[in-house]
Image 1 (cartoon, helix red, strand yellow):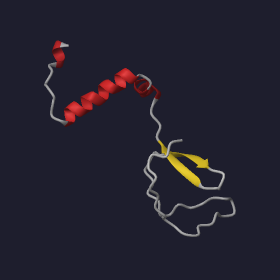
Image 2: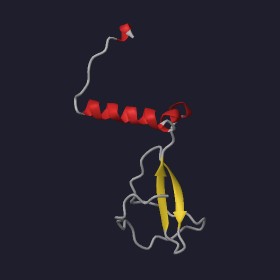
Image 3: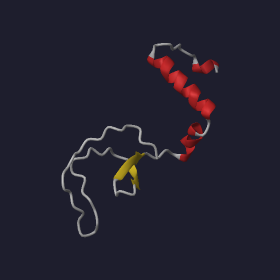
Image 4: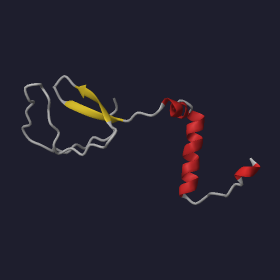
Length: 91
């Protein structure tokens, strides 16, 4: 696990687990489709690390650094207006 932002904000005080050891996160904005890896250190502090799932048919891209860099370059080009029109029938 990598903590990518060291700035934490307290969002609740004195929250107690229920009888099934569940903690309700009432004041947390949770996005749809997100799951969490849960980490605990020796002091008992807990970090929830949000995760998303990608389909197996798209996983190849993230396992291919060259293809991923090409897609990222293309997105930067598009964002900066460096695009051209292609006639798909000629491909």
